[in-house]
Image (tube, rainbow, N blue to C red; front, side, top):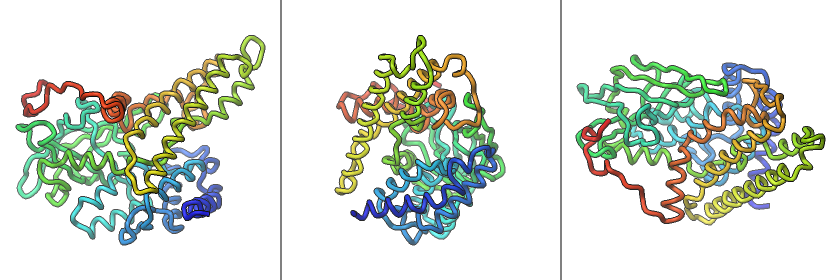
Length: 401
């Protein structure tokens, strides 16, 4: 048995031992506050068991292993439905960036340990109402204020901000230079005076995203994590730092086996839907698609094991998987007829076709919209030229709003 397989076996044994306390069945019927409290207890248990910060330095409370072990653990953990969603962004991007770019190492270590144990949560304040997927088009501004900064503006679609203690944020500090050059990167206390968080209720019934307003929020210069005007590079590092994470070829929707079970149970023209050629074709196409995506992920893992850097092919997984999940969920609802219209706002989108379909559009926007992924595929895989950019080299304050 290889070291990686031994690690996988050890992880699976531990996860099985705590699944009854923290897993999918234990979470049924809990409201968000109760589920979050359970999640905090799970992260504390995971830390004590030696499965927290797997690829982080030991001096920061991590395990000092590689990204491969992290992906192995995350993949195994995903199957048990543990209450980790509240902490995924926090531990995935803001906290690693804090370790890399914040110079106050005593502050960093305290924040890291608390984040690993689920005691503190961080958010990522990037998207804005007028910016869409154009991060460099943001309008939240930070102005010099004595020996610090004054922050004003609005962010939107910020996941779990209502439960966050801290966040990382990019703001415009110089509007007279081209848009990529006038940005600066900070961490911000989400409990500071002038910070207001307003949850947004989504079509699926939950409110895990928020709009966040900043009204003369004071930032000390020690909260700056980039050179003044050098924030875009740190923002890109944030988006790339966890590029190859545990993936799900089903787009984080129901497993294909659940569709097969449904097709056996419902009828088309008096016969089981599984006997209809059109339904069987969709099953075959989905199986082939998922197998292809899993092959891409396997290749990326093997490249990392060989010390190589995986390419941009990872963009294919999210793009294809979530689109496919949306179409398959729609077909599942259609097959159920009127029964497919029943909606349980507390149902898991990995188990319920209606919940999966309603929440799929969120998945197609979060972490990079379809259009951004298509651009990545076009430019970095197919070698096509970049789109024309009329704002290239133009001072930000001269770009029409």
